Image (cartoon, rainbow, N blue to C red; front, top):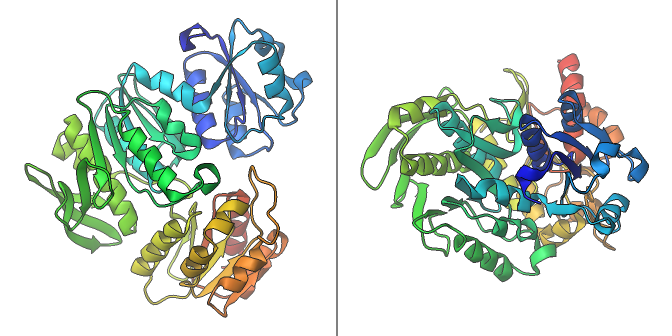
Length: 450
């Protein structure tokens, strides 16, 4: 079944950030959309308000009859769904057309000018910047985002179908379904070793991805990565480089050296050198696409960020509360650099929820080193996501490795009281699990206490 022949789309795992963006897309196209997810969240609530039917129990009897016609229904699932899932087994047994999320994305982008953002870190922020730049510069763009944009309060930017901007996800080698015109690689640090086994296989997958670019397409790579392409970097000799950096009223002001010119006076409001790098590659791809400097400068200055990417929940003279999705040691290092740059003399409390037993096991020493940089560390229990426990791998084991005497293991039920008793003018919540669901409760408690 071609996508254009489907009248109905049913998602297994519809609450995932990538899946929900596709669900929004098909709703906007006028299709009937429904799905299953394990947990009710703000994302599923938003989809329901758009007319999507969602249930939270893996049982065929809860599926609306409209989705039980294999001739008219496309089934989309995420690799996080186990093969034992009752609904997935049913659809496979009854000859439905079933595609992974990445395959659907590949089909949607194939007939457009596609700009794909790959890398183990920085994908979501870079994609959202690039989508925003294109949209503000009046490009007919659809951008699928891996987070909720602060500018649009959505993980989908829909302003036409001539151009698509997508995250190229290395998990499960999903990005190999794409055929981009332009692509970038922001980083290739080891991750998802439960999938790849070792770092060399991960690097090979990025090499394979680079070969997916269409003829006469362009590949952009962070300076120093072992893949050839148009390079970018900060204050270095890259093809595209940030120059003359200043921090004015908490914002970066800088120039960009391109292969042909010096583009002056960009303003960017997100803190951290990692975010500055993300802004640079989005600008480089936009310049190569042909967008003009004055419009790009105006668009970048209006960019507000992505929820759970160094998001200020509280920002006063006495208290700062920041929430971030960081779930890899290098991402935690980037958060630390940003917070120290902005608040160099203030005590920082970091609350971290490890994500996946396998990732915690693979990078335990690196996690311990990155977390030890903060003044005080609270660890929550590991969020398992799709995994079963690994014997001996738990948050107490990780806590014991942290070289910081101001550390403790905290249960979610105790978290707010623990935060209140640990005075810190700068508080961070960090992690990719359900810690994001605690943010509103923490913010409310801190607001009432201040």
